[in-house]
Length: 153
Ligand SMILES: [Zn+2]
Image (tube, rainbow, N blue to C red):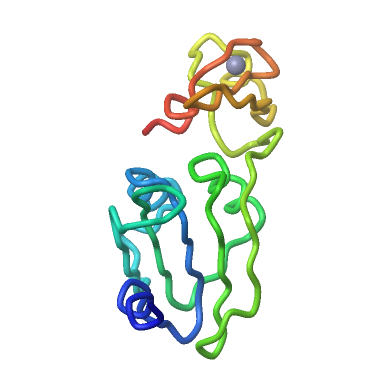
C-alpha cells in the first residue's frame, strides 16, 4: 500500500502538493493559478484512483508556495482539496481548502454593464454553494454567475 502511494505521488524536495482535487478540475486550477507557461517544474496526475472521490487530480509544484489569495481561488475549484507544503521531502504543513465566503479583486464581473468596469472600484463577489456549482454574486450589479463564467474557464 505504501509502495503504491509512492508511485502515485512521487516525492518532491520543496514545494506544494495539491491533492484530492476532483477529477477534471486540475486543468482549471493550472489555468487559474497561471501555472502553465511558466518554467516551474510541475507534475500532474489526472484521474487517479481515490477512495473518497472515485477519481482525483493531483498537482505538484516544485519550489513554489501559494499565498492566501491563490489559496482562495483554489478553494473555488477544489474546496475539498488538501494542500501539502513540502520542505526537505517531508510534509511541513497541511491544510484543507474551503469555499471562500467572498472574493475581492480577483475576478472581473462578467456583466459588461456593471459599474466595476467604469469606476475605480475592486470587484467583490459573495459566494454561495449550490448542488454542483458555486454561484458568485457581484456586490455592485447584484447579478449572480456560475464560478466557471466568472473565472472565464
Ligand atoms: Zn457586477
